[in-house]
Length: 138
Image (cartoon, rainbow, N blue to C red):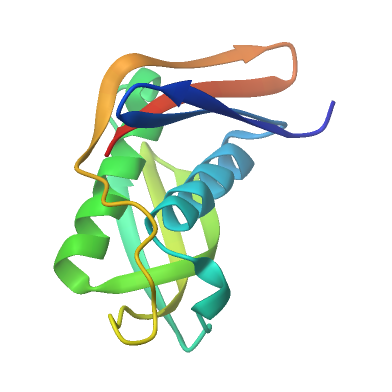
């Protein structure tokens, strides 16, 4: 099994279980899922790149930390992405987000995400596969 995404039905929320062969790939998939949950990504053009860094003192909450930072970035910088590059180094995740400024005229909101929750969250590694589960409060 290379990669897998499972959408979880959850009352008033949306959740995902994601599996990937590396932590970087797992983060990339989760970042894309967040963007795809926020807006219809077909309308996003890659016009610019934005860099963000997320420090993580505890790897256990790495995906939550990254997703929360990405949601905050979307809300404060009005930037939506459809692709990203991910690098992990020295307890920091560096993301290069590829997309454009969010425009209500161009981009249609899919779901209004209020928060990335701790509810039923986990991050684990089994053999050579990383797996996470996260719930988005909508």
